[in-house]
Length: 356
Ligand code: CP3
Image (cartoon, rainbow, N blue to C red; front, top):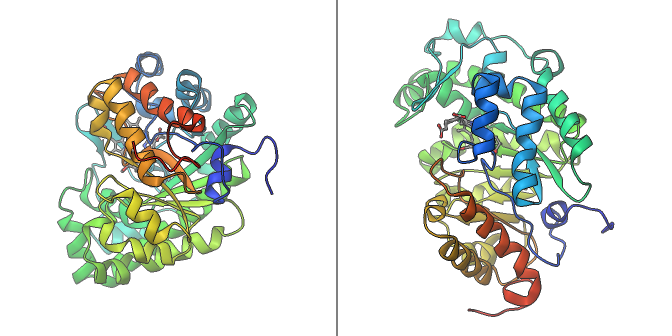
């Protein structure tokens, strides 16, 4: 049932018809914003900012204030639970995440610590509470976690996974060790997502950025059971969205887990996605983030074209196919958000079946 203040995003995740599509962007808080850069300098770095509830809450709210997007996503990182499990983690400027003692054998995996989120990740819950207190009731608050395979990729490779061959070797040659790691990660991910919902997250996103690298058979054998288990254990608690980059070949299988929504990258034509999965799940996406390196006019036109392809079908969340890039002009983000806001005026979508 629709309630007056129910955030548009939650309505769309329930596939209710909405007057316009809700809009938010992955990595909507980030280095492309001057106010983010200023706060990061003040905090002393990314990790210092993400692990301090007051800073994390403030930076979570920055893009909501500036662009009036329909959702705030907790400012944090998928890799912080690995730190809570005992791994060293740092972020090198220009290089991204570095885990200097990667997991390569059974002993290092056995040595990982069990995590109690309220004890080991308390800044996450605190930041969510602070954000909720500031956030308008018509905005949704999102929590998230990395999926076990993507976390394993960073943990085993020691940083950006690239081709991920250390992980693949572990997976194929030492399958029991790999499964032990996946089991531990699935447990942490589940409890971390539950904790976020307890602290105010109204929907959760499971990011499996690297799972799309696998052939379908391997995806089904080594990844799918864990993700399905995590989603099942959260069923009824909060709407669950799944993102798999490069996942076109396995999206039927992802939809079969019955998540509430799938987030698509830009390689999947969104109109065809609605034809195929639109009766089963809500669909988020999926403009190529690189389009936001063009002009505001181009961004707006490309977003409208995307909305036309969706044709106003219920269950659409306008977003990018991956995170906002550092070189993005904030005016291009504003132009993207505007396309969703204007769609309610009959410009595109939601009832107006127009094609340009
Ligand atoms: O979306 C949001 O605005 C919420 C915050 C968020 C961050 N990372 C902040 C961040 C979320 C949801 C993530 C998820 C995340 N982190 C994923 C899954 C989604 C995806 O993007 O594929 C992954 C794989 C990571 C791991 C990670 N963290 C990488 C690869 C990097 C480097 C990125 C880069 O462009 O250098 C990070 C660091 C990170 N996480 C930054 C931000 C804003 C940049 C940190 C900085 O230098 O200030």
